[in-house]
Image (cartoon, rainbow, N blue to C red; front, side, top):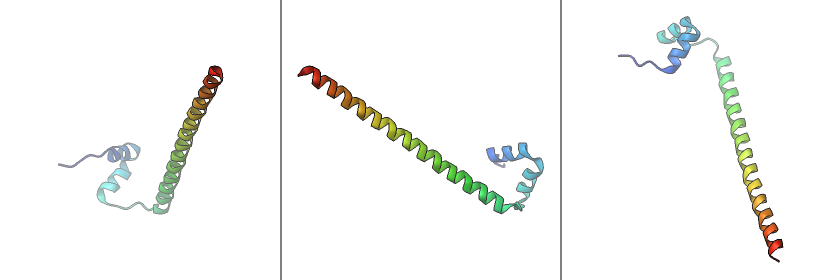
Length: 79
């Protein structure tokens, strides 16, 4: 019994002939383009991770600033 993977379904839906070649073990002729696409996806993933980390750092700094603001406001009122 063969295992059907999601990538197989995606390849079949995109191009029946590409799926057939893949099942026959035929390598794609555009290896350079595939490698460039993989590299572009890797770089994009790193950029998204950096953006998420920056946003999280911004929220942490905002929270710290609010805590100091509340502390300052309450210490002035208690004097």
